[in-house]
Length: 191
Image 1 (cartoon, rainbow, N blue to C red):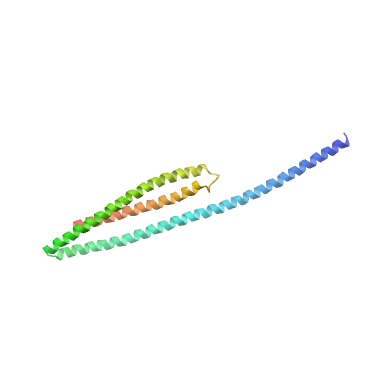
Image 2: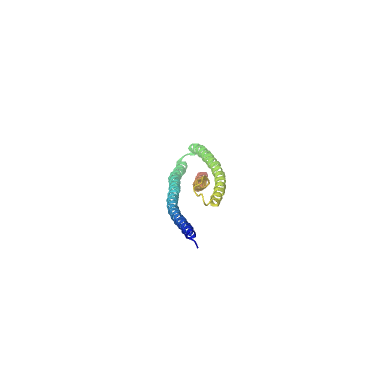
């Protein structure tokens, strides 16, 4: 074998070793970059979940406060009904007629309030149905797009899911209000 062949062979081997070293370095850099991107992704995911959880908590607290206020109002109305009963028993026949007219007017007001609540509840239930369906569809689309969790579809699905929870609480609140009004009407009719 000639010296030229050894020189060419050594040159070729040197180039291949240099290429292997370059690819190894590039591979190492890509692994580091992947680790950094994964860390950023994990941090962003945690932040997003905290934001959704916080917003959901705020909405839940607002509805709990509304329920507390309604409970207090309910107690006041029960006391008002008790006062009306004692007043009716103390009145003579002319005053009883006036009290009966007031009672009828109050029953009419309560009935109108109950009808309004029923309409609101129907609207909220329809919106809940539509939002639930849309959230389910968007969540399924988001699941299919696993590689792009931050897509608009995934964010929209999370927002709709929070809205579904809020609507469920709203429907529950309206049902409680309707129940309270029905109880008031029953108590007023019984008096």
